Structure formats: C-alpha cells, structure tokens
Length: 168
Image (cartoon, rainbow, N blue to C red):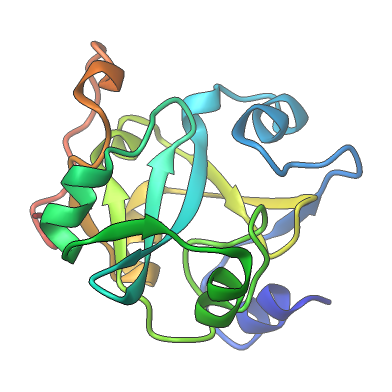
C-alpha cells in the first residue's frame, strides 16, 4: 500500500485505486489504460507561485495558462522541480494525486473538469489512478474552481456548470 492508499484508508474519501502495469504517467497513457476521453484525466501539476508550492488540476485535454494561475496564486509562477513537487505533495511528478498531500498546498481546479460525470486522477504512483466525480475532488482538495487553461483549449461543448462555491 502506497502513501496515498494509506491516506485513503484513514479517510472516508470513498475511492478505489486501480493499477495499470502499462503506466498512467501522462494523460494520454492514463486515458488509453482506463478507456476514457483524455479530457477525463486530471493532470495534477505542481507549480511555485509567489515562492509557495501550488497544485493545478487540469483536464488532460487542456493546457494550463500560467498567467491565469499567476493571477490567482501570485506571481511569479514557475513549474516546480521534482524535489519541490515531492516535498510539497509527498509524491513524484507523474503520480501526484489531487488531494492527500504531505503539506497544506493550495489547489486550483480547471472548470472544464465539471463537464464530465466522472474523471480519473493519479493515485500516488505513475501506474495507478482512481475514478471520482469532479465535485468530490473539489471537496476533498478544497480547490478553487477557475478558468486556468488557455482560452484556445476551452472546449466548445456543453456540460454542467461548475459549482459556485470556491469559485475564482
């Protein structure tokens, strides 16, 4: 049992981790492994904003817009190196879950994830993911829901709107 699975066992998160030996390190790999749309994959990206680590949860179909993240989290914004990401979250890049981090890291969540009934997120290792409703991720991570992706990446499809709570 890895650190994230131990965290899950001590909480009432209600999710089940599934391992895929072929790997789930990238959004495309994860979507292929679980058989879903790449947009249903939650990329957990670790950045340093105004000198503090933050996590951005982004749909696998989208690209993070760093200036938008900076407007929310503080400037300057730079991608965290592997050591910083592990120290802040407790996990290596490629396996960072959206919650259950080693430190109290602010989390910002891509509004587009709410266009899906369920999404898949990393479970602490580069070969494990779990299925969850976007609203449950928001609750468990205490995420601020915002438009944090590049405008050209925004899907043109309809879908449920993100909840008003925690919006930015």
